[in-house]
Length: 122
Image (cartoon, rainbow, N blue to C red):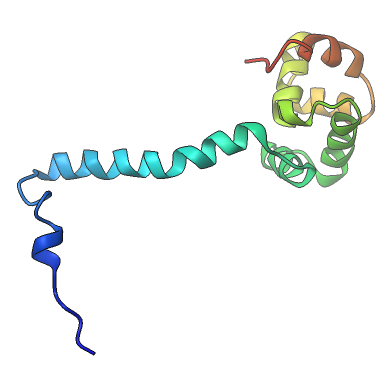
């Protein structure tokens, strides 16, 4: 079976575009493809994802696990555990690693729960 070469027909709508226009079109289409994944990430997470975020922030697995467990207990997982740590650090004027250490030890959750009732802190 021989493949019919239809490249010229398929590229008709692109052939008069400059390199800059092709570049812009590529990134525009890429954004359209990725947007549903970005939207999904705002509404869906899991303990594994949140632990992964904390690990990338520099926490050990021994620190990340209890933070995620407390976040799950207080129904804050959807707020993002990295966001929770950064919010607590801002509220207490602490380095975020120190803030995460406190949260992992069970300290500060009352403050976070009160602060995060209204929505995601930015």
